[in-house]
Length: 471
Image (cartoon, rainbow, N blue to C red; front, top):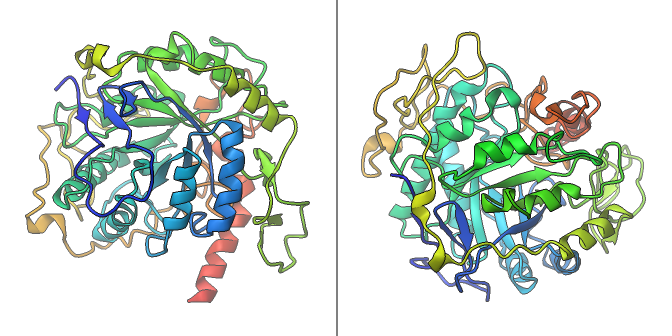
């Protein structure tokens, strides 16, 4: 198939709580109910490590300021599927903001060689918890799982996870909320990963959108020197919606957000659906747009303080980044294309990439996807992919030997508020992609997963320790 239509406006079970209409993904565009094109102006929001969407009053304070900033979408990396989210989801809706949410938790990060029933259960619980909210824009099946040279064998497992979650969603009769992937921007994986996750011609087995965490545009920069020209080349007529799931390089600073001009104007606006800024709260990595008070001694046990940063109260904009972004977004308002005038057949499904000797991409063509609970032995073979049968026993097997604890990863993905932005690798991801064309080495670019994970390491350890003590 050369195009995929994903209707997100019908078939939702349960009662939706708000006035925002679901966004429809069609071809490689996102559309409002009235047919106008929807562009993401988003911010990463992980105020607290476990779930920032359970404190209704705090949500109201934060989302009101986000509305002033011009935000229409937030990304949340970790949620507690068993918690109550009606209050915060209503506050989001009242502010005109949609939600993109990662399905993985601290213990369910998809590793290089497995996708098992423990992960399946946790992912499906997130879908169960959020499917009825009309302002849920999409679910991420993973974040930067592939970020090092030997990580690419994880790709079939990511694709299998997307397949199984789509089967679960449809079998439950939920509306077709898109399920996609958030990738690290690695030069050596461009464009193989994005092409692989959307290749094969079987709509039930591909991701519904592709998102990229890229920090290659560091002000001052240009379309060419940032390598955005290459990203655009790979995104032209992409078969599903594509957008930036993290951006906002903070070196040398201050951030002028000139990349937003590129993203929301031609040629990028013809193919990209917007960007999510990293991040809302100021932490030790200095990416924050707001703060909740002065930094305190991390060793002190203080209520509403984690890793030395207060995480509750009145958000205070940080100058000049907050106002710079507010001004920038106020002046970039793309109109895009009206749905009735859009020809989804113009998109182009790429061929499945082949592996190269001693290269970063090790998946050779359209390999058969693993079934749930299957682990990789040897190498994948190239053959027609097979869809999992949701009525088959193989879709819900008992756990394999892998426990779903990350397979060498740290606590998974998310932000530095205890979740660790980046690949979650305990050795760092080696994100060379963020240095491509920027004139900066990874160790100098604080946005790369190497340095970003180093900043988050103490936070991750603290969360694991607290969790262990709680048990």
